[in-house]
Length: 130
Image 1 (cartoon, rainbow, N blue to C red):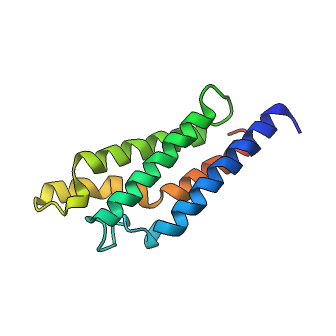
Image 2: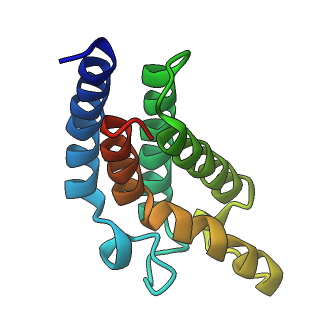
């Protein structure tokens, strides 16, 4: 196994161990509390999932810092970090009353709901050097 492949495998294993715990707790996609179809999108449950997803994205960025071959994983992680920050900034987990704020919460919530699978896919693509 090449050094690059060994690193990608190490990153994938580290990422997977974190993702599995959080995904089991919070779900993902349509089963995530941050899903735009979920009644929990504007609750602390989504807020906790957003925090965990953002932390996982930060962890990934730390793992791949200075490494080549992780363009997709880096991009996905940065997008998730921005979404987690925006969700927090808008106070989406406090059930905002203003319609404009609620609409603004939709995009970051959708990114967060899909965050765990996207990070996993990015880690898999890292194994392929992408």
